[in-house]
Each structure stands twice: as structure tokens, then as C-alpha cells.
Length: 311
Image (cartoon, rainbow, N blue to C red; front, side, top):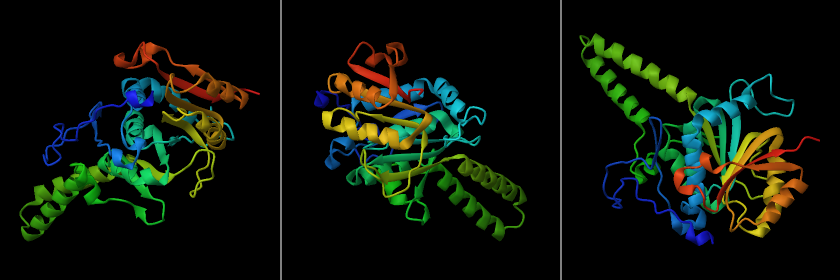
């Protein structure tokens, strides 16, 4: 059953004490730290389920393979007229995110190959998803889809005990610049601060733009989504009534070259889901167990790659 597959998540300080201001990443991708804190009060999507952790670790442990496969979508020579990709990167969307962790893991794993990411779920989960993205603002830039520019809310970052290193650097640089204005003899400090500012500017321009928006499977979204090169999600087909609308979203959001990957628990996701996928024009392949993190091998967890069938 779904309820048996809950992951126990510590607070981001790693101790269970939310008053401790020592920050500890929940996961790491190379040198990139990923911060996360669940919130079960908003519903089942606010927690971390084992299938979500399984897919997150697949992204992290096979980041080279993932980049290689997705890079084919970003290559102009392989892009069809229906593709949304360009030489500058790909567009990706997470369906039924709940908490935003999986999207952050993808962004950290593929780096600058990902130019635009949409993290979606129902409206009652949007605040937690935004909070997770803001806690990882060293990886993603959260775009305000109300047309008010980028979102940088310090209170959301602080609520998960995370402080944006770029913002700290900028504050330090501003303080240094003020001191230099008062002391004209500190020319070397000025040069160093200018270099830091340039480095921060370069970093900010390479971060993926992230949109957190409402999307119910099979329904039009309030924000125009378009087509995506990569679609992903975990525990999105665990009830039979989700199958038809989920497949409708896959049809709505994919082009002929789109790659989708979903994580499922085979106990909950019945075979008729895969039959419906095939009938809708998709093919699917289960990734071999050895590509999953060791704790998920030989279990009921499965990662499936889904693509449109050639007609």
C-alpha cells in the first residue's frame, strides 16, 4: 500500500530540532547541496514517498547518463519541428510534484542543459513547492508567473534554515564597496569585490528558470505551458481514476520526441495503466534494477521511460 512507503525526513538541520540553525543538506549532487523539509499538513504530497526518493537518486547517481540522453533533445540536428528545445537547452515539467524536491534534484543533476523547469501540482501544494525551490535558489531561479519578475523571499529561505550564498556574497560585496568608498586606499579590495560581483552575475545567468504552477491532470492550466522535452513524476498513477487524466496530460504536454520518466510502486499502479498508455500511442520500458539505488533493487518500485510510438 502507498502508506507503507513513507520516507522519514529529518529537519534540514539534520537533528529533528527546527530551532537549530546549523544547515545540513538533505541530498548532494556533486558539490551542489539540496535542501528539503516536508510538510504533511497540506496532504500526502507534502511528504516524501519512497518512489520519489528512488527517482531523485536515479537523477543524482546517473547524472552523466541523464545529461547524455537529454542532450540529444537539445541538439538542433535531432530536434523536430514539434520540439520545444533549442541549442540553449531543454524544457522540463514535473507532474504531481507535491513538495518540489524531485525538480530540484533534476536541476542539480543536469545543470545548464535545463533552461526552463515547471513544477506542478494542485493549488494546496504550491506554497510548499515554492518554499523548496527558494531553499535551493543556488540551483534554480523561481519566476513569478504573475508578471512581477523573479521571486526572492528571505522569509521562505529562512523558514527552512537555508541562506542563499549568492545573496550573502552580494551583501558582503555591497558592504565592502561602502567601506571602499570611505577609504580610497583599499583599491585591491575594490578589485576583488568587482570580480566577485562579476562571478555572481555569471552564476545567476546560468541558473535554470523555474515556474511553480497549478496543473490538474487532464485539465487546461491557468498558465500556458506548451510542449516539453522531458516530463517526469513519481507516484502519479497509484489510483485507477488517475490513469486517464494523467495520460491526457502526457498527450497535451509532449511532442513526438519527448522523453518521460515516472516512478511507480507496482502494488499500487495496476497493469491496466500500461495497457492504457499503449492504447493512447505510447510505448514504455522499465529501467533495469541495477540503475536504481541499491536500497530499491529487488522491490516493487519501478522506473519507467515513456515515449510516443512511431506512427
